[in-house]
Length: 151
Image: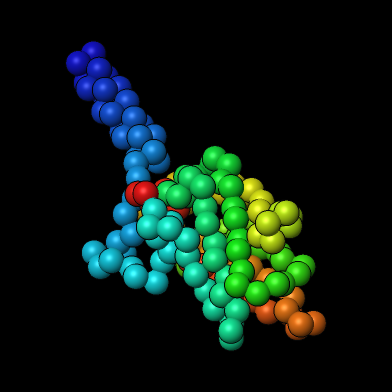
């Protein structure tokens, strides 16, 4: 009987740890322990990508990109663009392609909402690819960020 109690207690602790592990915030540190400066840090503000003279800024709210929760997306540009699209994919791991519905706002920016799954791995980097048309030419930029990052 004592052995069964120990086994049950061990399994409960293991299950609780794995569930709580999904909720813990992760910092932008690679598995090797180095800070990944290529990732967007939305806690510090917007993330910027450039295509020629065009600056595209991406803002996520909440800024720590929580898994399995709606995240508001805002895209701003320094010049007028049209036909803005966005898709979300795993950068290092195939997670499918998640389309994000982007709509123009009255202030010239673009907004939408996205959601992605959790506990994909201990270090899950997502890539948001933003497409747009400028002067009749289709262009793309991307933003890499860590899911469940500390804000």
